[in-house]
Image 1 (cartoon, helix red, strand yellow):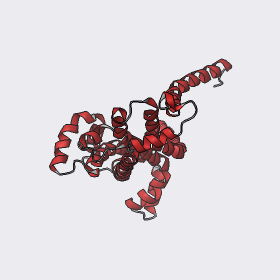
Image 2 (cartoon, one colour):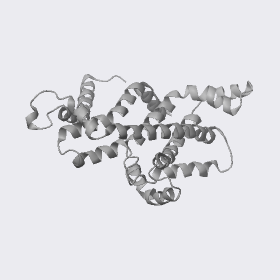
Image 3 (cartoon, one colour):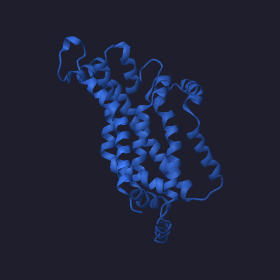
Image 4 (spheres, helix red, strand yellow):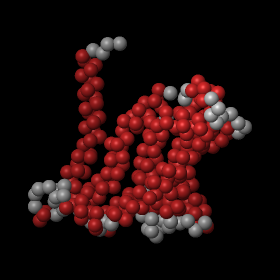
Length: 268
């Protein structure tokens, strides 16, 4: 159906308005981060705010903790999600449907509902104030969504291709890793990006599972940076940009696969 000139202009106006609403706060933060820390600093662009925020706020240590936790969660959760999604999406076995609903329950239950009993379980196992104490709960939460995501992909994969591989003598393991995984790269990379973003931005789990601050991640470090180290907005805005930068950089590199994966998921 042909789109009229008025509809085309209206679409652009709406898109520009939404872009302004989204980008305006980002522009304000960037402007504040490059402004003077105090009135005596003088006008101009103050790139030293990022260096000062990095050093004063100890963001180097916090970013290292966040990277370590995020890498562990992404590797374990995505690998387990691929295996579980493959089993639930392509195989028929007793209890498959109730098991899938159990994974859906993990998506629907909020973190606040189980964080307190989980803390006592982790403390009984001696895992509080450790990397694994922060990573394991997020692995469990990520596997719930990841299984749902990968099951949808595997259920929509080409049955003819799988049957042809079986006729050629390929087993389930070979079909998964040599046929379906390479074809499903956009879906898998989308899951990687979403899992990394959610893990990186997680605030409650590191706060509860590391009460003494041994495994303080970047979002926690930013929260404690405000008030504890600085009252000004320039260093705080610089710290916020430093914390958000890894997710932005990863999205820039994976945006083509991410958009393709989201579109394919929506179509299916």
